[in-house]
Image (tube, rainbow, N blue to C red; front, top):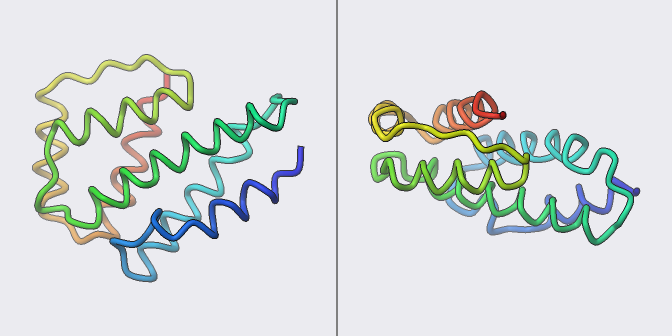
Length: 128
């Protein structure tokens, strides 16, 4: 499987980072590129790997949207983001509304770059 095809697709898709400044966009793109290897590991079918990368891009669009405007983040938005993420990593993690509300409150006071870092770490902590 040629990983570079998927990396290039990710790096060439503008709407993954259009709500972020350059440094924040770079952070999100770097996180996304790091996810590709794990997502396509053991996947022999190019189309199946492409679907996984499409799912990753869907997660990244969610991160772009939420971190691009941290003050408007909601616990429902976090639930949607977590659902997107667990679909691509194969998890079934349940997060209580109270935790989502606390995370939303914390993120609301952050700058976009800090929000990207916090959200990506939070998502990865929820892998089953």
